[in-house]
Length: 254
Ligand SMILES: N[C@@H](CCC(=O)N[C@@H](CS)C(=O)NCC(=O)O)C(=O)O
Image (cartoon, rainbow, N blue to C red):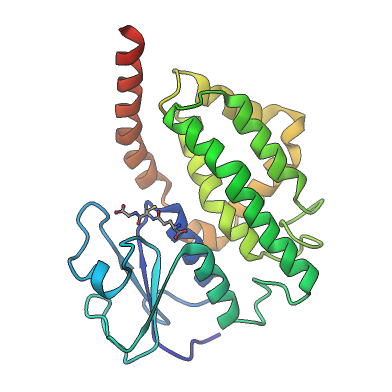
């Protein structure tokens, strides 16, 4: 499959929202540096032109689509700039209507969007609260995963008969990937040992059998392997969460 217009994806390896869009482009079979340009933004030191020329919200991911073929750091005013990961997932699906990333059937389309909405409202806030230590209850996180699990097709991927990957799967995979790193390394603002405990439950409790298989299927995809750098993320999270743990220890020692 080929693109009708030039496309530059502004992204950052660390960012789960950006990985959503990288996954979608990879699933279409487009090749980075051949069919589109992948431009890494250093979030700690963003280029001056990024906010005014690409995304007024100054976040990744963003896409510049159309206009003349220009390097990512010299964006053309005549390309269209589009931001927000969930909008971009649908945009990539719309560029490739035959890819099955967004099913054609109206009911399956609605279910795809509902799944993403449920993940965003039920899983994400609980997961962030747990990782930051604001709500150290692993039970809330496990319940949120059960909630998402209940929406999955009986086998395979999330939607319909589970035979095709859709944007529903691509919206959640980056967050499960980061959750796995955080829990199994016990990175977080919660008391020591809590992350590993939750990970152990997820790995062994029969309640989570369907989720385990689903997550294994997502991780095994070439698109996931090509866009997820476990060693890099482990290193980044290690320093970020060491700080949160120190703050927790300092506050409980008072
Ligand atoms: N709602 C946005 C969230 C994107 C987002 O928060 N991106 C973060 C990185 S993960 C970002 O670019 N933050 C700006 C910064 O760090 O300055 C989306 O879904 O695309």
